[in-house]
Image (cartoon, rainbow, N blue to C red; front, side, top):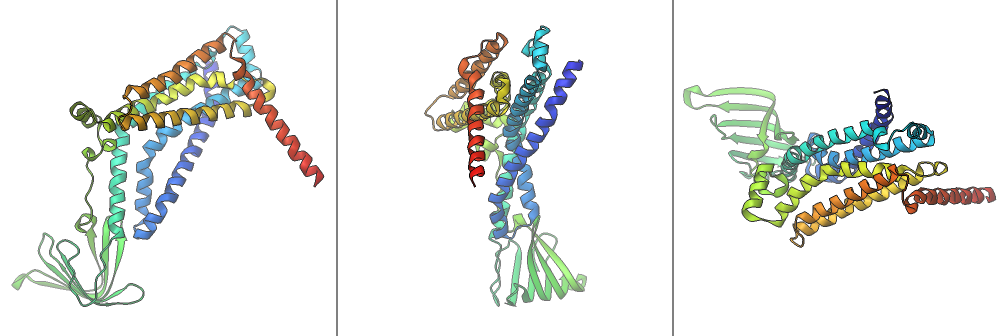
Length: 385
């Protein structure tokens, strides 16, 4: 147990730091892409924050395996550089025993990722799509032509005398015919602004009339707000989970596969099952890719690991695309994933036997020599200058 706690302590800090860094980079990149859309539409910044929350499940499915793999590589390389792993091996411990707590964590994280992939991810995709629709609806917010009645918004009629250069309306008449009885507003000026729930007419110096006949009530105001929900704008048609395979619940997706056998549905089903297993594949590769000669340091091992990540995710992407187009069976995606897993387990077994392929052992050494030559060249050039 002491060894397990020690190994977990060495592994956890790099894992947490890597997870925060990788997720932050992805969120920042996505925020930059959405920033122009939110700015152009005049939508409140809260909607951008909602988009970031709803895209998190997908990013976590990507970043947790990457952070786990690189932190496990860092753990093994650190134990090797300090000769601790040699002492453990000489006492009769296997690599499997040394890495046991981290392997258990891989299993626990797999269960978490499976839940995210099957249940949380489609809900996030649905919510993300609906927020985007709200932003697009705000981008097309109604513009009121002076001295004309406008009914662009359902159950609400607008009339304005004019509009100044700052976008403020003057001589405003608003009839609110939504359920609850007609309400009339007359004000000297007003501004139309975006809120988290839709639009708001902020009116100044006016009168509110409600009711009919003897029950009519009048209220004079200096400032008054009339909220217009997004769904009243007539421009938002919210998505439902059954509209697209990426938003379907597991039950809906499975039923769609049974009824239509659509390639897109098959590809999405397999993708949800396969993405969580990536952490198990990377766990199998972490040991054999980290056992480089001590003088090579960790650079070579990390470069090999990054190369594996690029290859693995690109193979997944290509196979998913081919299956969704109907060019390959859904099992082709599993063939690629299982192929990687079997290769990783074989290399782990060779590592236990002390018989790793020379190209793998020398891979880190090669990167180390390239790094040394590059640093020597830089030092030589700086010395000349």
